[in-house]
Amino acid sequence: MADTTYFPRRLILAGAIVSGVLLALAVHMLGAGYGLDLGGLWRTNTGEFMPAGAAIAWWLIATVGFSGGYFTANLMHSAASGQIPQRMRQFLIAVGVLILAGAGQAASAPSPVPTVSGVLAGLAALCLGAVMAFCGAHFALRKA
Image (cartoon, rainbow, N blue to C red; front, side, top):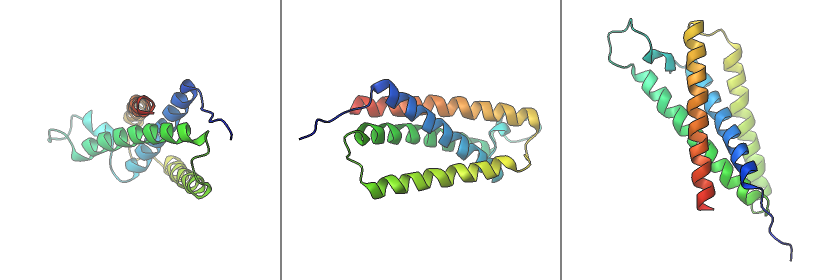
């Protein structure tokens, strides 16, 4: 009987963080096309306290970053021992490719957000996605 092999914890953590950040950035780019703009928090010309689109964007990016890190860490932990069926692997690869292709299409379109605000929103999405992906991966590895 074959021994169960595991990836090193740092490799799983790094892979999960990268995956969570990429998914969070993809959701940020797709959401910007639908009007969910992170930069709405920094605009002073609106009379509202906080635009609802900005709040939804923050929560959506944080949720996707955390979930992406958590599920990637779980999948990488169980992948080395061959516990993931071939059909599940193919499905996950197809979903990842479709999300990143949609984000690439959204990123290539002209931005509806001013340049400085768009750069700040992108950096904020990157940082938020990285922190939440780390938290998700850390919780998944503590559970395993």
